[in-house]
Amino acid sequence: MTRRLAGIAIALAVLIGLVILYSSEFLTNAPAAVPASVQGGTAHLTLQTVPTYGHAPEPDWVSYLVQDPSGHWHHSTIFKLPAHSLVTVTLYQYDTSSGLRNPFLAQVRGTVDGTATLNGKPFSTASSDEASHTFTVPDLGLSVPLSGISSSAKNPCSAAPCPLSNDHNTITFSFRTPGPGTYRWQCFVPCAAAFIFGNGGPMQTIGWMSGELVVS
Ligand SMILES: [Cu+2]
Image 1: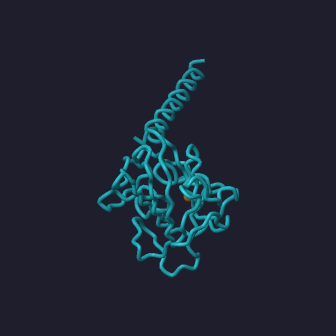
Image 2: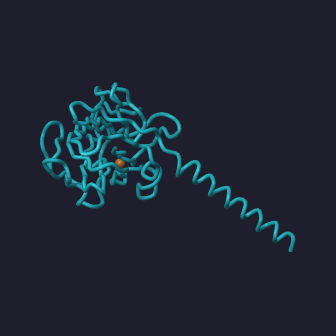
Image 3: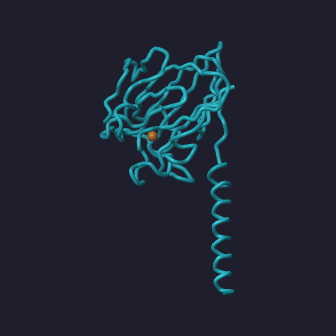
């Protein structure tokens, strides 16, 4: 009887410990919010997606990064944007393709003119095999597929922040922010290599393939 009670107490203590770790290390562990640069009422948000972050704690994970108004790159996916404003996004995409499971997400949706540009050329649908990542804000109906670079690219990037001298695609688009609020965004390509169905690790951890638009 005493041994059984002791067993239950130990199991309970372990479970409580795991719940505390889950909330302190995972649920409440978010990167710092980085503001977009705002000029004349228009916000300019500059992002990059890298095939491997290249640093601790997860050098092999795929990730997004954001540039602050003074041009420094930050490993964050929380972006501060002004409310009711035009946001122009420039996204440097350094990763190769993973491919989409759902071709619906190969469409450009919710941008100002319904299109985006890929290396200067307007497009409204990407081939679903070409997608490396998406930038999707479900609450705003906004989604842009990001085509990957060639898997035989000669000069790929391996550690963030990637310089423009490495092989990349440049994607641009613009959208309007709604009123103040926090809007979740994420990548919908199962791009987490080495995880089950590509959906673990960086796809589940804020700061890598998902984040928030903090609109105020
Ligand atoms: Cu992704």
